[in-house]
Image (tube, rainbow, N blue to C red):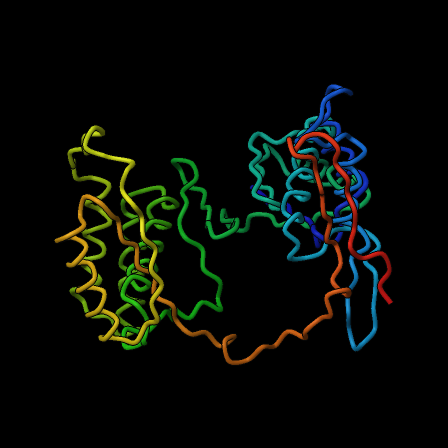
Length: 337
């Protein structure tokens, strides 16, 4: 077993090459229009959003020569398109693995021998000159892949949760001023992850005990932890009759209400609002309450403000009334000094 990881994927994506992959996939027919855009127009928009990224550091401006910027909305799409192409061409480089799985830029492989793995790794780095891979090989029959620990045994491969040595078990404290829904969501997400990753009931039980221990150390009462585990397991193993689809109606008005979280005051107000809606407007409205909490960012605006004309990679498409003809594409920023 081994895993391969692309070194600095986003900043090494070949933009022109990936744009051509997208265009060739979308425009099989030369006369086809993608949401009213011709091939040349879509290419222009992709180039605007991916190229000429301007960075500001110490009052100086720098242009990114290739790759896509970290945090850009289009960056994950470009990365996924390129990695899909790379994986599709894996079989062409020889010594294909018995098992190959990919998540973004992390690739898990299983080979019959070390020689096949080394040859595959060498050829993998030759697929495209813009990207290079690092390699991690199993040690003592174990390999970490993402947050999964894979272990070889007589029966095959078992999987469980992997935690770094820096993991402290620190979560939101029981006494913290935060909505109880947040606390429940954290607990349920950890239980769900353990249930999905662990390959046996013994490992699931072990992980549940670890989660319980972590939450006890964060001040959570034993009854609350056991209740959340019971709720989680009941959802998966208890047979509950499904609701009749005919009883559901689409005429219900949905109300989304944001409220500041102020501890018990907010909890009591939420109960009263829900009781009111349940009593008088049950069949007419559906109430969803979201508590707004404060973050450090609310008090410390650490990002420097940029003038509007210094913001880059914004493209505007003004189309005709039918949304398909007469598209004119322009960029609001021509030069950045």
